[in-house]
Length: 240
Ligand SMILES: Nc1ncnc2c1ncn2[C@@H]1O[C@H](COP(=O)(O)OP(=O)(O)OP(=O)(O)O)[C@@H](O)[C@H]1O
Ligand SMILES: [Mg+2]
Image (tube, rainbow, N blue to C red; front, side):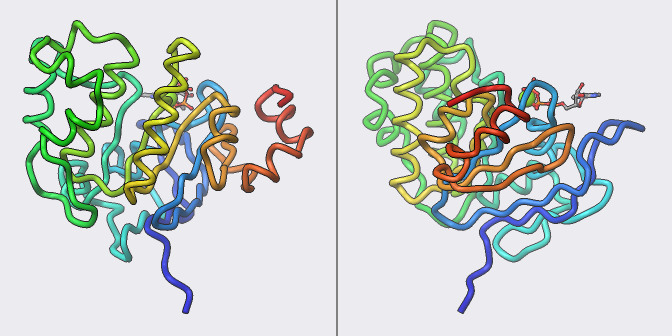
């Protein structure tokens, strides 16, 4: 028996107004995987995430989640089904306390993996517990990333889409965020990790997709990608 993927993106075109950014983009994620989408500035990574969760509607192609066509659904609906986007700008409410930020995420809608209560989320993230009564604006960049991820867990997400979670963070905080991503996955949460930092992907991901100018140009396991110097150099300009 071959089980269907948790998420399947098939031949998606999407863009802004007259501009097509994504071209026949296909990727799939099985339940329990960490899959990366890695590419340079402007490659179309954020546009891909927006198209999956329904902030943008693809102009052609399909997005299927748990076997259901969600292509035309709005983000307010996909979030109820268990998809959660943690955006690049780590959207939290700066004027509310850490605890209030978590309480607001607790709309109790999503299915699948059991969601965390606000108390459990605070226990899970020690740094947040210590700052539970402080305003969101007082958190460091790494702590804001933790809070944004914790909000997805309280909301009952079972597929978390992380848009460059390590961007702009000091190396030791990058390590903390990577540990959190692994911890999420250990809890049974499936992760789509968008990164420009391929080293983070190679360490965390089961499989990796490379995106260049709106097209998937490579797919492989981390072991395969790590050995493919030509692909790394051509699309990412890095040697690992
Ligand atoms: N709101 C928008 N309106 C018009 N064009 C946009 C909009 N957002 C992004 N684009 C364009 O779409 C293309 C892909 O952008 P996207 O944000 O998806 O890239 P990205 O891979 O996430 O880049 P980065 O690593 O800088 O976050 C770029 O050419 C960008 O200029
Ligand atoms: Mg982006």
